[in-house]
Image (cartoon, rainbow, N blue to C red; front, top):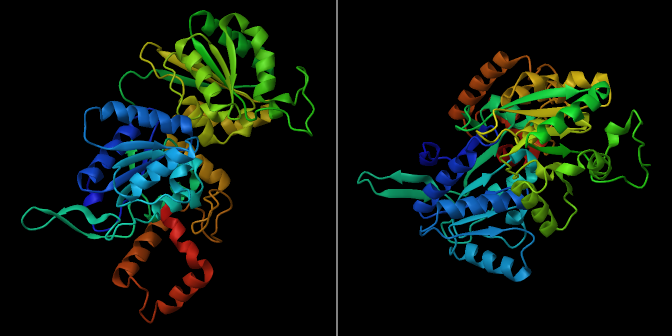
Length: 452
């Protein structure tokens, strides 16, 4: 709430583990914007997650006067056009959607708040596009501040060109972690899980222990549990020959279709199903519904289950070819299990094909702290571009290591902010050369740093 009352638009990162309540925080912020005559938009990376957010919001807002809608690419052209018109005319207060929210033709009457969920799943330009969405009404955009009050206690404000921005993630990408060092993203952390969450243990499984691990999964299923098996690909590509069961390299390239063929005979009595993103959406929903109802106890999937799939009774996850996934993605995936108070302990099994791959993943066994995992990614992959679209890669600095020189960077940041506060336009004689260098080096890309 304090951010929304400031004279500049909010640019905040909300970090909290899967299921920690980030969606409730986002809805509260959206309702503050709506209560002050502005619109709010919540963008999710998949239709499954956007639909889940919309359904929960419908439950929370039942009986309220808030006008809201769901905007996704699967809607008919007529439905999309109708929602576009309602947003432009101010007939909708809140919209939940996918990247369809930044598609051509979407205009808001007075967008006051943009929320980006699972921000690591979007490109920097997509995040910037939602932030830069123009309001069509005169005086549109957020109030500056959104709900300031004058001397008489009446809300007032001067129009601003940008909406407030709240980006949310269970694991910040290294680029966003690096930006927080410079203060461009304020950070809020939800460091506790809500009541009713069990403990999840993570284990790295080498090829030598594969069969024992699968036997363990079978024992959990026999006790009434449910299991995910996640694979990096859907099927074999044209230049890939199918791997035989004994191929020592098969885990590096195993697909969901291959895994389904291998696991279906082993766990047939428990019911095994396959789901991936190339299936018709209706088929995906049917398979997930069968898994949620317990008619299917083993689900073989791609990362379509990474976000938006909430199965309380699932207590085992096996990630095949785990070395193919980033640490942040693995952290997201294991958040799909251990979501019920009825299950005291759940297990995430990271299957690797070579012992040498196990070392990179051992941090997953040691911690569930999303920022600690992001720091490891930062040290391994670099922060990406500050004024660009790469979200990881080699650092842009020659003499500074973002992972090791944190105290030096904090001092430099303090001096830089003091200088900009004293000379915001860098017009002073001592700053003119710096201004010219920044414009020449980065030009229009400077705006991307606000995308989060």
